[in-house]
Image 1 (cartoon, rainbow, N blue to C red):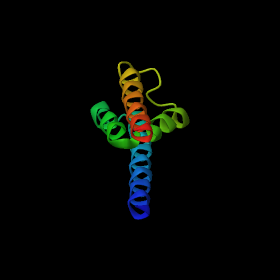
Image 2 (image 1 turned 90 degrees about the vertical axis):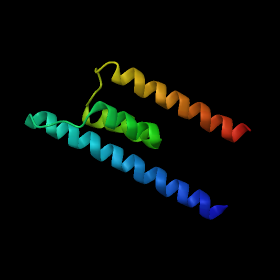
Image 3 (image 1 turned 120 degrees about the vertical axis):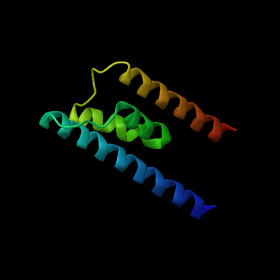
Image 4 (image 1 turned 180 degrees about the vertical axis):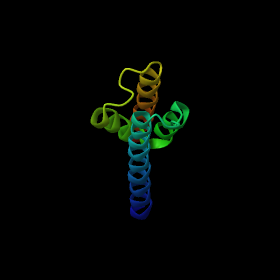
Length: 91
């Protein structure tokens, strides 16, 4: 049980770290006028567990903060994940 929890934590950290890196890369590409990382890819990272990293990256890099419907979809993903986490903890 402890090993599974530790593995889940490591995966969570890796996914969120990767999400932060991809937001940073997209911001750098935007500044340089280069080919961008798709919003679908960034939202996909949030969907698989990187929503905390996405919110952190948005705040730190000031990236995708006014973009819609991106912001709404990110909040929706985070709300669903929070609800699932609460359901798992309570149930």
